[in-house]
Image 1 (cartoon, rainbow, N blue to C red):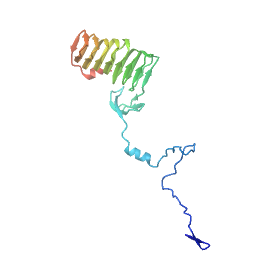
Image 2: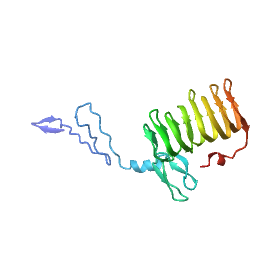
Image 3: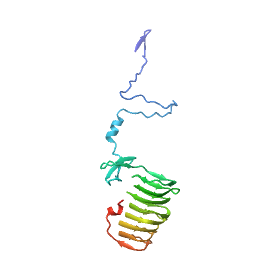
Image 4: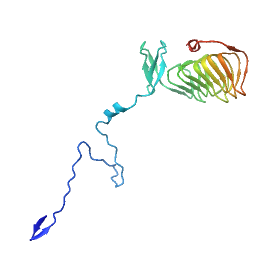
Length: 238
């Protein structure tokens, strides 16, 4: 309190704010309005803690085209190198919406859209989904899924074969797989090291050689059936 002309005078209170160490002032959006949201700030040390606490990236297994070595890769990777033979492994995905006449070799996934076709070339991939036309030899390290109608030309090898409900397909080459799930109308010669499952809307015509056959109510098989023991290596060998 001060004294002026013999009378007490209240001293004005000038508040002083000190900046907190290590925290820069908040920067607002360029509009400058009272309701503007602050721009996010990059805090020092965030990247360091993120490296410590973030979970491991998701991985999946792929096998080498050249030596057959099975190894893990990050799911988001576009390519890799075999740790055994050093061979280059593409991991790119392909969406085919036109006439494709070049070889595909990837451990990514391939989708043949309704407007697309693959004719007269070899296809090596992980998963293959067919909506369009396929006239090619195929080797899938994953699932071959058929959702189209018509003839499929070429020998097919995969871990799993799925023919979706409503598909009407004639396979003119041989099929080698570890398991098969059929819910459409299929004419084929199938060798399966595991079990062939015929869903309730399925009709399979042709020779089926498998470790087992499951026929659900409403499904039917026309042709020969052989219960055999086939090694998985023989079923998917390239």
